[in-house]
Length: 376
Image 1: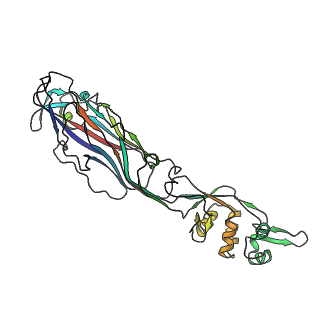
Image 2: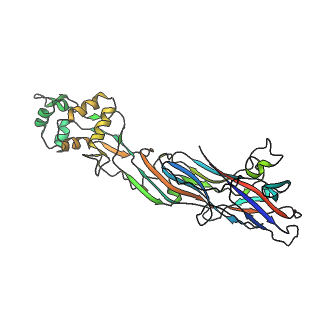
């Protein structure tokens, strides 16, 4: 995505050492088409170049040595991928003497190296309206006690005799001589062979997040400096007779967004807690629902866990929950089930031209500042 900003320098009496020339600029494509920002569809990321009042930039009045500020904004609308970084950078033409409408004296110019970009020392970057909704997975681990341990702990609504009758595959057969169980899934403790990922029912939503340290996309950039090498690949500079085969000019990075690698820093912002029971009937006030956990255990392909799911079926919901809540769960920090990330990320650059030639010919000088957003 690319925005081109023609910059025109008006120097009525620039040759005089005491003169302060005036600068003016229009915000148009080289063809003269006014740049505008279309409304965004869901799932889009848009680059905007704005004045400080939030309007599309249509003019930028410059005076040599006097910085003029504007705003570069990256606007997300329902982005479902928190890993995709972006970079907004700018390149600058030389400023060429204007002969007339769309006519330039390419032999007379203010070098691009006399044009620089800078940022305020405090608050060069900001964000507003940033929000997202996330449903993290739950990581289930642990060991389910044996039927005898469950009964002795008083966790079940029925006694062991009733349990053996209702679900014989769960506990097995009781040997009257040894008073020991055998043959059932929980005739002894059952340890999960590995952590089981479960779709959780925990939803966290945050809106209007502005703390830069807590953003889903950590932002940076704000690279100050001169445009040492001119850009010949865009705008007015493309018409320079020496432009053929020349590369793009010195880029200055205005704004970057580095995607999140996990939810570690976002769980608190989302209001999500690991202090919940693992499972409840419908997932309310718990990390997951009974249906989701049973499905996840079946999907492991582990025979013991698949048999456990079948053996639990005859039991009441409350007894199933009592048995499964002996397992432990934690919310995963892995990025998962993001429903929408939206917000505006801003940089506040200022552009300044300081002609280095004290004998610069008087006149109007124009060039194009090209601002580009690239997503990796």
